[in-house]
Image 1 (cartoon, rainbow, N blue to C red):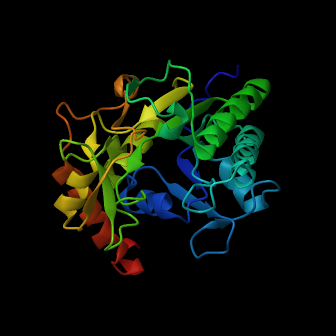
Image 2: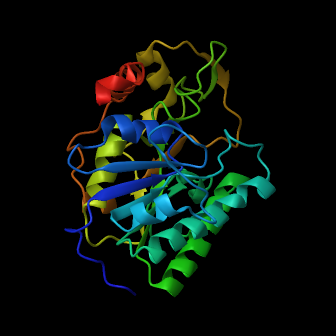
Length: 295
């Protein structure tokens, strides 16, 4: 395995596939002392424009000065119908991103995976457990992880896979809320609970990980604990109606964050729905500021 290169002479982080909501989050909350270069396949102002399979010179040149590459690109349930043919692109994208990093000698590449790889168990999921995905999306992400790991090992490219929980405002709940929203509720009236992270915290934690010279192969990425889905909507002032949860629903998806806490600072107390939504409100305000406010 290639030893991690000294980061002192490499300053920037490249975010591949950064034209979506997660890329916006990084743009607005990324620390100023670490340059962030955003990439898109589409020609957009301020972005590196290139495909990933045959990257253009600008992307290759930028990679030669990067301390890390974060691959945000991928096919999600929100971007495509739930069928394996589309989701299979996730592995292809990951392989292409790893090759870009290796060819440029980038010290580390991060791939965004998902809590969906853990399947339907409501236990607290640690990185040590064997994934058992139950959905086509979860299976595609786990297949991506396996193929990416094999390819990175073959090349000697340092790789870290981030199994991401829900990022508030970039998720299918708060980020895609509709006035007719309904939520599954349990017999006690509570809504389902999931691991979440606020948008500002997501950018901060990811930037902190990019500063680390040595990291494990897989890390869960969320705040400690879980948040009720209904609590998030209620605090945000977004209406929702309850419906009886089906018998096969998963009451709680909880990502263990002990491994993450060994490498970055996490809150000593559980983050509340109010704190999560405060970060989302700030993100919403920043998104609507004039572009020159960031110049």
